[in-house]
Image (cartoon, rainbow, N blue to C red; front, top):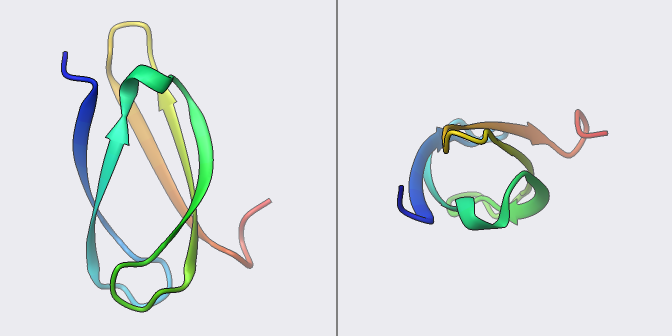
Length: 65
């Protein structure tokens, strides 16, 4: 398993495709990253399982919480 994985998603604001670089070595985490297209803040949550699989959730600022 590689520590860095690219993840393709769509911005919850503008709907444009974006690419996130996920650091799996840091384990499960939540953080804010600006959209590469519209520059609005996206709340990103990543869960990493012991077997190395991961899931990602993106939410706009109004839905985050």
